[in-house]
Image (cartoon, rainbow, N blue to C red; front, side, top):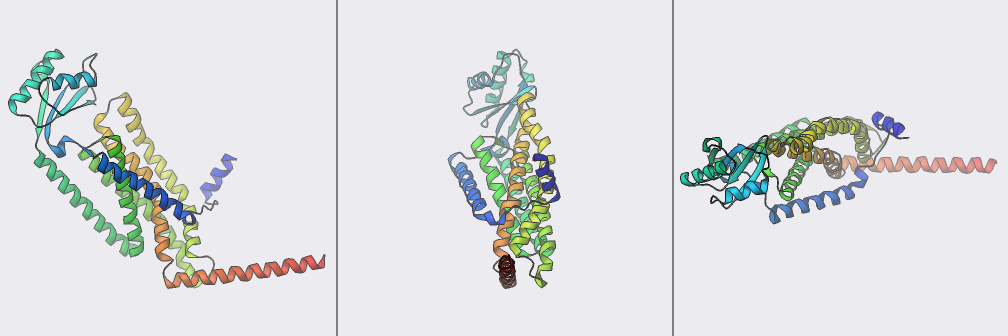
Length: 335
């Protein structure tokens, strides 16, 4: 039975009423957005040292050392804000910005505790000004991306599709940011790269769906075979397996990095990027099917030509139902 369902799904023979369930999708998306936005206020993003400025210490992990222990050792040297992370075979400790003598004291304390040389504890001081420049450039890049996408979709398709795609992209960004907020994962430049990457992925998925919708709905202007809503659902059914396959192939290696790499290999740097990609791909697949397309259909249904088409389809279906009923009565009378 499962095999038969998979075959029908692969051939696009299953019609799923995505658009008809738009209230369900809207409700789910609104709930996710509220939770995400609440998280950004209740538990603000854990910005990395690249954005806030601070001092970073790297040194080799020794047998028996643990995160809490390392945190207490560094705090005993004076710093108040201490974040300890595993970075491959090393400990990566981030503190507030320290002066030269304070940095030296931390180096000496750590070296003494773990039988290292002071030079074995590498240091890096990052100013908040550099982080501000990174944030500004990230916002500029995001705005340029959004404007470019609006122009491209408006020219390749139409402004309604562009608007629906932009709403879906913002939806994906906010939810991904909410996951970072609630989880406490550090936001680094790698995270920003992940955010921009999921925008491209989500957009690709939406464009594939929109292209199929455009292909299916164009002939409807001169016929009364189905409404715009029915055609959009038909297009979604035919692109569903492609979207699922693309998502599965892309998510598997990202999931391996996120769940296997960070837990078994201690790939602390990679998790900042992989979490954004993992969440963004899942949400992007959902939004292209259940957010972007229903919004597009809601906008298109207000156009006079599609309102008129819906009336013609309703009249045709009513006429066919009437003929079928009359035929059934006639056959019944013969019996």
